[in-house]
Amino acid sequence: MRDRRRARPRRGHGQAAAPRGGAPPPRGADDREGDDGGAGVTGCEFGESPDIELYFYGELDAASRASVEAHVRHCAECARRLDDLETIRRALASRPRVDAPPAGDWSGFMSRLTFRLKAEATSASSTSASSWLPPSGGRKTSLHRAAPWLALAATLVLVTIAAVLTLRSRTIPGATQPPAATEPAQPSAAGGDPLLALSGQHLERSKLVVLGLATRDPVHTSSADWEYERQLAGSLLSDTRLYRRAAEQRGLNDVARVMGDLETVLLETSLGDHTDPESLERVQQLIRKRDLVVKMQVIGGSGI
Image (cartoon, rainbow, N blue to C red; front, side):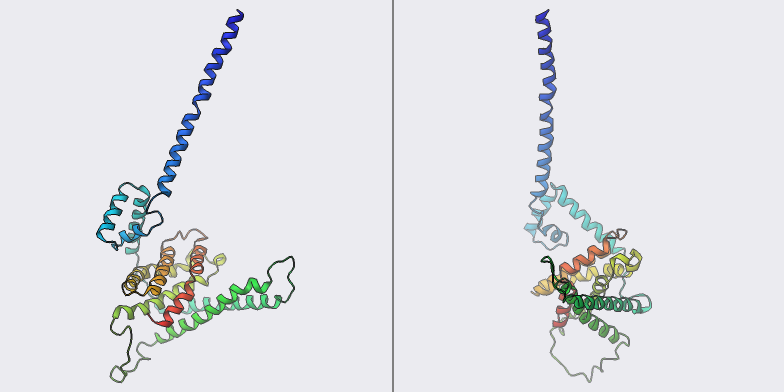
């Protein structure tokens, strides 16, 4: 009897140990599968490369296209990227082309812009007045904190002047241009290239979109308030891509980079989740991160 009692715990111990000893292998196997799955995504040779987008737009040579096609057949992540690009293309094709507000009335846009500039100027004045207080605890002074906003306000003033002049010149078509017979011939870089001449007009329209987005207050702006900017951004996107390619072919690298940044902002504006209250703020972060307002002003001033 004593031997039997001793035998039972040994058998019970052996039976209980089997599940405890056998449980870790499935967990380890699952962990290894998760690790392999993660490595499969992060280790993708096209993960950080633009080749998938270049393949979609037909900008790769034959060898590179074959390499991407072979890769996409086995990489679900890259195949999904291609599907997303195709979805964007179909969505843009169904959008109406918008080049101006209804009836060409820019008064709403200009009033919002003026209000925003006045608010920035008032904020800059108040922070400048308080900047003479001595700093405490090693913190930055109000002047240091206001410096980026002062720079932005100055930039917006310059861009606003250019936008107003552009709008006034379009109020009476042809009124500011003398007859062709009396206009003296002048050398022009874009004179022999209609595409480059049109890209300047495109850049001016794009400035209005970018500036309108950059000056809105995300806290007090609803999705309906910037519907016009979204529609105009969608209509400008395909032309922006065309001008970017043209600049790349002509070796205008600075222009190509600005057009690439503009394309990213227009894409996020036209196809972002506009029901999300933070959607506008994300677009504004893109504009600030790329310093797009200043870059567009510099490129427009130097000529394309």
